[in-house]
Length: 102
Image (cartoon, rainbow, N blue to C red; front, side):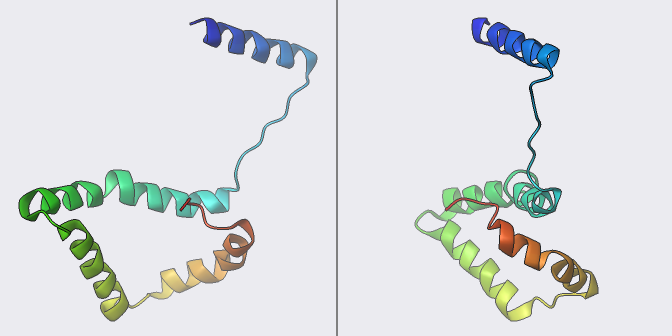
């Protein structure tokens, strides 16, 4: 509670002094970050990996990832929307770097 009060007081002081600026990441980068975040939190990918790992053990989660990658590599065909998005954002993402760590 003390840290929150100190932070709030500091924010109010900066507002009074008009001595602040806002920084935000590029909204372009957020598009890809949101897609990655959805894969991690909203798509069910991680719970599915956990389930196969619990059922079959061993390296089955990695086997599933390998299977998904193989499906992507051998079967996926980008449509016009995918190509349009890539044409629009590729150069910007290359300048900003990957939106994930690791």
